[in-house]
Image (cartoon, rainbow, N blue to C red; front, side, top):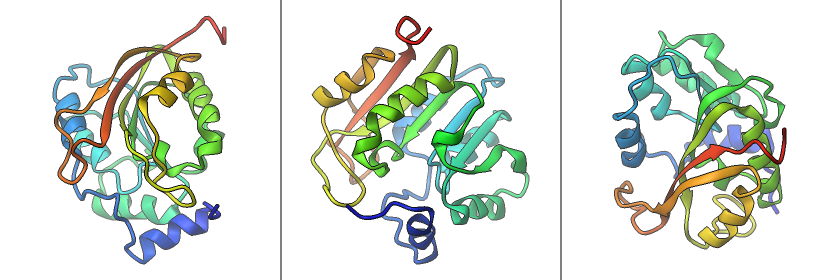
Length: 199
């Protein structure tokens, strides 16, 4: 397994080896964002990278949007592209070190970038970071991808087992409006924080 260190990710950005980067907000997430009405939601985008999702939300008037990424290069890219984005909302750190809480967390190519050994830690941490009635919404790859380097794939059966201890699964289904090149490879998820196991 390749060492997925901060330097590994910084080098990806420095060398423009960012094949996961769509260069724009993904269609499924844009569609989801467009029906949100509460502009005060505290939203986190973990492993946000260049975070066109954060840009889209910010320009729509969501001012409580936070991005965390282990790669400083990614955070600096956002600062350059969006000089008006609140700098304190751009967090250069490891996701697992976060202590804040949020109303909504957006999953966009973060889960598949983590070492698969961390997947159960991911679902537990997501639960911890969400407020009462908080949601995790986004996309997971529904395909076998790579085994020794990201993106790492998986399937619905595995994901249901991972998420069920910590979330009520509202939706985990084939994505009907995937961005070009990802058609037939994604699940759209909308899962609600579960309390009984952790409270």
